[in-house]
Amino acid sequence: MKTIKKFLVLLGVLFTFGILVNATQDHQPEKPLAQEILEEKLVNDYNVYAIAMPDNLNFSGELVPVENPDIRERMDRELLVNTYWQSNGLLLFKRANKYFPIIEPILKEQGVPDDFKYLAVIESSLTQAVSPARATGFWQILKGTAKEYGLEVNENVDERYHIEKSTEVACKYLKSAKEKFGSWTLAAAAYNAGRAGINRRLEKQKAASYYDLLLGEETGRYVFRIVAVKEILSNPKKYGFNFSDEDLYTHIPTFNVLVDEPIADFTAFAEQYDINYKILKLHNPWLREARLNNHSGKEYLIKIPREGYYKTTTGQ
Image 1 (cartoon, rainbow, N blue to C red):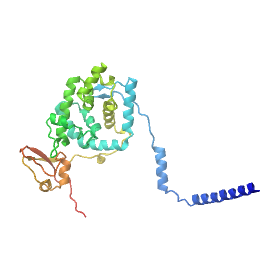
Image 2: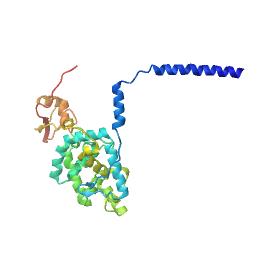
Image 3: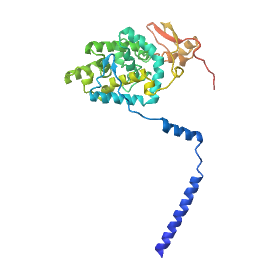
Image 4: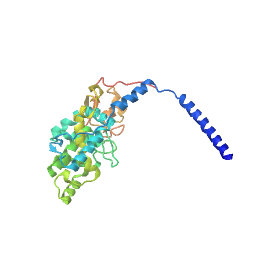
């Protein structure tokens, strides 16, 4: 009898629980129609596809040997990673439209292939980044390298943040590496691992090509990442990126003001040109403090945006 009673009690509990659950479900608010349509659209429209290996992949005219199965897999990885990191990809398209017109003429003038603008993309995503090793700016230049090539680096002025000057230094380094190794691909690898590091590996492994070297993770992916970004940024529709010209960031025209003496207060200096301190620093990130020491009387060119591109606002 006790067993039967326990069974009936348990049955009653389960029955009551079922009623409560059903009641709760019955009173769940329905999804808005717009949300249902959006969810259905995402399910039906969003697909992830394998990427066909493009023909004639090259870096600065030097072919990527994708007929080698190892090379093909490594190239495929970078194409997939950079295609399906969509938010980052769109930002690269937007920034490239703003900054490539500054970088491209310098590369051409310095005799460096245009493809090296994509090296700057993978180094910094075209931002004034600072790495854990304190490599700085678009081209991620270390302090020692910057000083070796004539850039001023101190707490007051850091020309690694100067896009034009840092691009010129990168070009000098790359041309030196190309002269040493005879290959733009190895010159690019040396930008990441250092000329001595690449030379040591070439000699130890008795190799002559970047694609024949066993390298660490970062340098081993380096050139493949450059080539992948080049391929994607050159063919947005092919890789599913959709935007109009209005979506892209644009370069703000500026004029230069020559300064050869100290400036005690950049806020007051900016006001002379109807801009504020923030705008002045946006266009001159190499000015690291709110003043310019310049005890030596060195000549600097400070960029001032042309009239009509910025509006000052007032607020609380």
